[in-house]
Image (cartoon, rainbow, N blue to C red):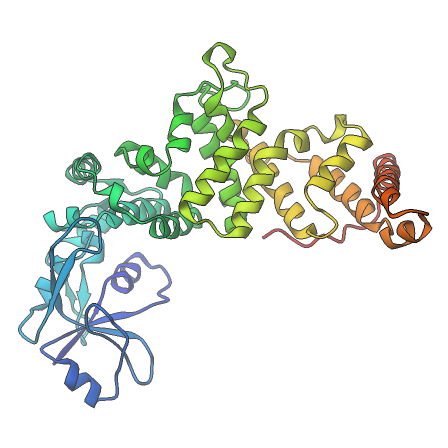
Amino acid sequence: MQIYLVGGAVRDELLGRPVTDRDYVVVGSTPEELLAQGFTPVGRDFPVFLHPETHEEYALARTERKTGRGYHGFLFHAAPDVPLEADLARRDLTINAMAKDAAGKLIDPFHGKADLEARVLRHVGPAFAEDPVRILRLARFSARYGNFSIAPETQALLAEMVAAGEVDALVPERVWQEIARGLMEAFPARMFEVLRECGALQRLLPEIDTLFAVPERTDYHPEGNTGQHVLLVLTAAARLGFALPIRFAALLHDLGKGTTLPEEWPRHHGHEERGVPLASAVCARLGVPAECRDLALCMVREHTLIHRAHALTPQTMTELLERCDVKRRPERFTALLAACEADHRGRLGRFDVPYPQAALWQRVATAFRAVDGGRIARACATPEKIPKHLHAARVTAVAKAMANTQNPPPCTVPSPV
């Protein structure tokens, strides 16, 4: 029995990046032998075991063969006679198809180290085309490393896979899982550029893909392209270190511009309301978690008004705070302000510009939440009058907070990150 460190741990060691997970391949063994040594089986489709002490994953060397469409249709073969190179050959990218033996010697049959040094993402072999999830994984690796290019032959293969309909076989849950992971990488915009270049974005997120054909005001993006503006906003959210819900809201915030009539370009009046059903449909289709969905919908609907904070009346500000349920969900409103800050900073790629609107909104939100609804309810003669009096008291509180620029009340809203 021989044991090899494989995959991401080897890759990250060579890159000088922290190694958080270590996976191993076991050659020349059987499930019975591993069980006898105290390993715990966890694999359902193929033999994967947890080490009895470290709890790291050990998988028997295996090969796989495509038997159906999509990424579920595979037949796996694990046996003592499966060599290490055959196991590495089934992997997606050359940089992920390296191994180290117990003495630390590098085993690199597909020249992954050379591709790491050249900053190239290259598929190992034709088996790459058998699993459409690998398109998303490659795009995610592009978002992680940022300065890696895609080998021309791999780029051509991606386009062939999309044209063959392989992407259409992906289940929504897996699409969301990979997109969510890509959004949290250092260069998330790169993921969507890669998906668009091979045609996968049009199949998976046509609402985003459409934006690249929509002209935009040049004070939002120098090239006048809404899709590129969205990617700049996403880049700003990543640079600011914001959490997943905020980054997802940044991605969807301008969906309504894709429905603007050509004769209105580059203006997009009313795109906020048009974008809400589009964003809702995306979230439903991908099974997006409620936290991400709710923030994205708020962002689509409210971001233009939030940007105009200093020009709004107390009445308008109060209505927005009520729509956002700031009384019960202050943390979501703070996240909304963070997404709006990313939108503001992402314009023209000026990531260091200030966003004073956030401080004003935080001030009025604190005053809004301080209104004692219980006291107002007790003072009302009839329950029907409570909402009217509560709203009026909130408007008054917001107006005072807007005027109190010298001594604003302390912000009690938690950090969005």
